[in-house]
Amino acid sequence: MSSPTVIVFDVNETLSDMSPMATRFADAGAPEEMARLWFATLLRDGFALAAAGDNASFRAVGIHVLRRLLARTSLRMGLDQAVEHIMEGMGALALHPDVREGIIGLESNGYRLLTLSNGSSRLAQKLFTDAGIGGSFERLLTVEDAAAWKPARAAYDYASAACGTDPGRMLLVAVHPWDIHGASRAGLGTVWLNRKQEEYPPYFVAPDLVIGDLRDLAAALRRRYRPKA
Image 1: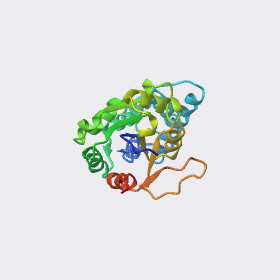
Image 2 (image 1 turned 180 degrees about the vertical axis):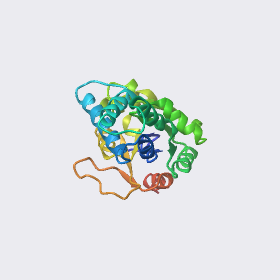
Image 3 (image 1 turned 180 degrees about the horizontal axis):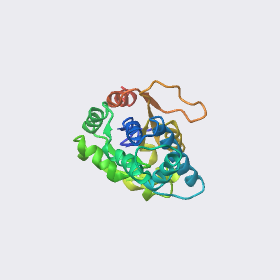
Image 4 (image 1 turned 90 degrees about the vertical axis):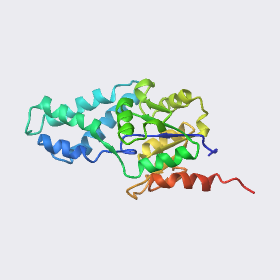
């Protein structure tokens, strides 16, 4: 891995804490655990479209998946109201506790910071503005402007072209091993943010670095790329 100049962040779950979405499902009368099923199914369908060479809006896929799941559930409100209430939750999320300080540390070390999300850049902007770090990111990229969702190579190629940087000087940070795998195959360096201390799946390309807290990344990069005497 070459010394990176650009750090690219996944957004959903990597930077945003999606655990409050469970409460949104409970508010509507659905089981809290349906939140994880919904997100996993949303990603599955987005990945299937990418594999077939197609693309779709994260929100559009999310709404249709949600309607299918909730249609089989006894709700406390009408289906349309439940869908709206849950989807609004995506715009009310906050950052994980380690994110703000971690981003400020990386920015102070001179890295160019971008995001590459399968979701909305508008929601990402709100997320960062609410946390006071909206100006820390050079670009907020979404795969809706690319040829396909991550982890298709086209998504990472789009990010490379958008910031005018060779993939070998870029570093992707994500909590999702599938994202790490896709970025690695596209020539980017990778950092697995393993907050839950889980085992990395052996069938994916291993990350270049593993951290448990984003506040540790700046120091980890200094150690790895310290000039040799």
